[in-house]
Image (cartoon, rainbow, N blue to C red; front, side, top):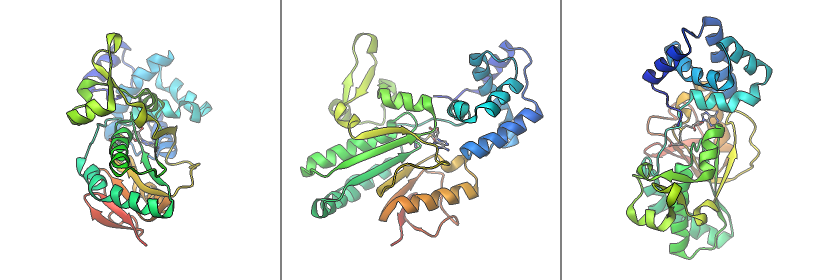
Length: 292
Ligand SMILES: C[S@@+](CC[C@H](N)C(=O)[O-])C[C@H]1O[C@@H](n2cnc3c(N)ncnc32)[C@H](O)[C@@H]1O
C-alpha cells in the first residue's frame, strides 16, 4: 500500500528538515505525471505529493526535489513505475463492489461458458489496474467455480495489469494478511487459500489453481498495448478516477476496440462513462455493454 497519511508526511518532512516542493518542481511533476500516467494533480495535491515523495527522496539518497526532477528528466521510464506508486493509491480489496461479481456468477459466466462450449471460443477477462491482485484473484475464484460447476473445459484466463511495480510484486507473491481477507467467505477461504505457518503465520497464499488462471503483466494504460483481445469483459475499476476527460475518452474507445461485440466494461463505484463514449450502453451499476 502506498497511502502515506498527512501525519506521516509531516513527520518525514521534519526528519528531512524544511524541504519543500517548490513551484517549478511541482509544475514539472504535474506535467510529467499527466503526460506519462494520465493522472491530473491539482494544486490541492501539493502537500500530499510532497509528503509521499519525501519518502522516495530518502530512499534514493537525494537532497531535494530538483534532484528528483532531474532523475525523471534523464530516465522517465526508469522511475515512472515508482513515481506512479507514490502518486496514486493502490487501495483495493477482495470482492470489492460485490454486485459486479454477482452479475458474473448469476448471468455472465454461465452464458459465456455455454456459448464457448458450442463455438470453441476462448473466455478472456482483463483486470486493468489490478493493483496488488485482490481483484484478479477474486475474479479467478468465481471463474474457477463456474468452470467446476459446469464441468467446462473452455480455455479461460484472466489478464491482470498495472503500472506500479510494487503492486505487481505483491500480486505475483499472491500472499495476503488474513485481516485483508475480510471480503472472502469462509468457504472460499478454505477452498482457495493455503494458510501460512511459522514465519507466514497470519498470512494465506492464493491456491495454485487460481494463480494459473491469472497472468500478471506491467502495463501503462496510456501506452501501447501488446494484446489483441478480444476480451469478454474488462474490469477497470477505481482507475480512471485520476484521469481527465480526453484521457478517459481515448481509453474507453480503446477498450471498445478490444472487447467482443456485447462485451462488458466494469467501472468503479464513483466512475461514469456519461457523455464520454457512444460505444457502450449502461446495463447495471457502473456496468457497460459494448453496442453491437
Ligand atoms: C485504486 S487501485 C484500483 C484497484 C482495483 N481495480 C480495485 O478497484 O480495487 C488503482 C490502480 O490503478 C493503477 N494505475 C493508475 N494509473 C495507471 C495507468 N496509467 N496505467 C496502469 N495502471 C494505472 C494504480 O497503479 C493502482 O494500482
